[in-house]
Image 1: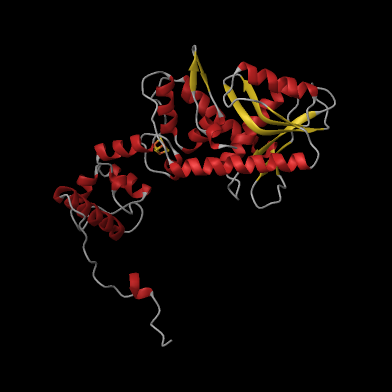
Image 2: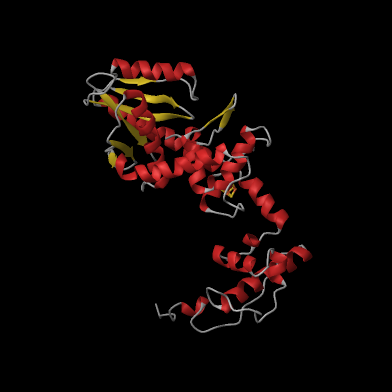
Length: 331
Ligand code: SF4
């Protein structure tokens, strides 16, 4: 799947919000992201402009991998029908349905649109299993760079298989993922195994967009892995800085932030001013771990005030840090 197709592209057309696999994956990772995208779709917030050369390079490699797989199919004697364009419009959707109705062997970049949902599949592969189309039907093949197939991929192929079943009248039993270094040997995933999970995430997103904007269950854009590939990352970083949020403290954990908030400590500055020893006993974890992040907050706040990168040397402690290195050996 090329990244440009996975990017969340929530759009409002008339009164209807259109959703894509990117929106589903975004929602799985961060409900705050759904809120922001919904505000863009409703015209309440400008779409963020972001250019990331790493993501561009990954997208280019993803496209190469997809093309490599298509070439592999062609070299095996299969004819490939490519649906033109990159977005979803009625021309692409009709061209895809026509190719499926003809029974074309391989359809690249097939455009599917069902209800609120739309998407472009990397490959639709004809299989000799009867459907409303005739003596054949189709299965979804997605090309992925990641060696390990993650929840995101499973959601995506589940969504596409679901839309496909709507078009052909039967549900594909499996969908496939092709990763690099496998001689283009697709790995099969039984769609029914993930159906409950897929329905749960899809239902959650559909409910989120049906309610008033800003009703996401996620109270705050706390940093997560998905931020690295999210177009909202600058927006969220600025918000955390403006709020002096405790996630700015190096090495602090989510559970520590939660406990500190329950104790009435809401900002990095407030954490820096918590007395040591702690005036309360943590529900989880050792008091010393809270004192460590309190000290970290203190030095960060002092550095911010002094407009300098401050550091302090920790006392030497046997069994910690460089003490854990083995003794030097002669030679
Ligand atoms: S940058 Fe991170 S916190 Fe913000 S919307 Fe994206 S994933 Fe969520």
